[in-house]
Image (cartoon, rainbow over all chains, first blue to last red):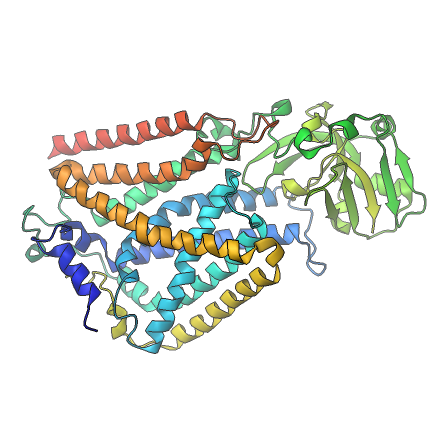
Length: 404
Length: 149
């Protein structure tokens, strides 16, 4: 108790004889009401990220008791677009919030009562979790992996840690936030006027006002959103200067996450020995050449590829319905279907369709995109295209359909 | 200090009610669930490596980035006088955040060979265009403010 850091910080920051005398905007901006507004905004954005992230997790780790429906077809595109947009928009809010409350991280004494101690311990997962979630998400959409852990699992489990901290922090700050939001913001009195600048902090010309800080945060979020959202909203693609993908750049004018060369499938996909096999719980196992597959009744559909990293495009596909292939092989009804790619390895070389997804009229093994045969990078000879599904589960270079 | 100002330790005046303890219990249960998941899936999450990034990120911010921002604010308050200061502060904050976000794109860490669709833009040029736009808007606001003053 001999060293009172807040007093020292306070004196250091406000005494005209101290070098870090920045009391002018310190007193105006490090404000309960601002902290509450930024906190509420972060709470909303992180909650959107958490819920849409949970949805993406269940998509990629199916639960037998909670089958993902095939409809609405564009749902995953919407939720994952929201996930990435909200995450990007939260970056400036998080930075501003941390700046605002930073002196509290170094406040002494650590705690005066049990509740205060619990609250301060909870700040660590809150701050570290918030920083980690935004940093790892932003790095992932840029496909930058400066770490050794698997991104999806770590981002997912840390999301629980971060969300738990938000719940605890929200409860701790509920009363103070409500009180400060209910009260109109207050300008500093003339008595608090800066002795050197001879003006109050809130007066025009002496630095950011509280409203100015909020405007700055909104502007930064807006700039980041506008310069990236073109990767999923095509009419805005020209604004996408900082978008990691362009919905019109790539083979056949469409982006891909991973091409055929990097997946190691070029020779296998081009080989005359390629067959599409339907096996498992079927009455008659089927093996089709590419010509036989293309001779089957084709169906057209317009469906999105919606990448987990937040980019997407919608395109006209055509190919054979999975349900037609299953009927041809005499598959047992209402089974889960496993699709296998030619890819020799990789987490996403297989994916599954639940019974509802497999029976959907728009669930195709597509052979054509935009009326042209699929490019190798898009999954030639054939790929899965199904409604309401993450792009990584739209398995490319499909060679086996197994009825489980 | 004004009554609305954040004072370290101000919360101490308030006794924690049932809402505090209920949300703390729920929140810590959720945190525990997350930690359990991290350790249960340690082959994927690599807890030691993950901890370096989680703890390192917080320390990097609290001990280096935040003091740098505050220091920059102090310098700015001294270097930029009068009416233009708020606009310069705002533009600088937006620029710093956009630059931070663009860092992995500009460096091209994620550039994949054999994939022309990965990072298709010139992000250094894009960043300069965005920053140019930010400062052009800031300059316009500053001019308007100086004229109407």
